[in-house]
Image (cartoon, rainbow, N blue to C red; front, side, top):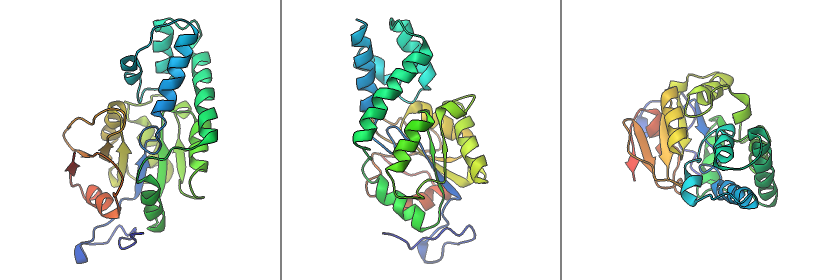
Length: 239
């Protein structure tokens, strides 16, 4: 475990080290955990049960969206259920899968352990609902996540900045002093709009180049040095 960098806002660059951010804010689905296939499978199961045509491309368009927005799209496609009932059905299917296994993305648990050891608070910022986020958090070591901001706790979900602003507020820090980690275009828009230094990590969708956006293909091998570089304002592109 790399503990050379400590959470000291006044730390300088001595020895090549840099200060870590006040907090790291993680998207959940596709970033922390590989649950996007769970959601896509649930959508295909639901639409097939009602004889509705639903393609993989249709499913990709819902990645990162608020659940109630996704439910509206599924209803418009022909699923004869109220959006709130669609959300409940989808959550139930994904929750069943999470009960069997929390599919952590490569490199996530070591990075979380390093951040925890360095005293950097971590948050989950997700458009999934709290019960699912709590199931994921429970699969990590105790105390890994200081707070959770879930999709059923905000007025304006991603791509609006409210979820990330809310996480920073709960942690008592300035969003500009945070690093946000995201995988979807919708989530990246939200994180950038909040003012956080944003890292895009490829999952289901490619991460397109944007001004001020750092990019990596995986968190596997990512450590505190990368997080500190992002906190210092460096744009890192390892795509």
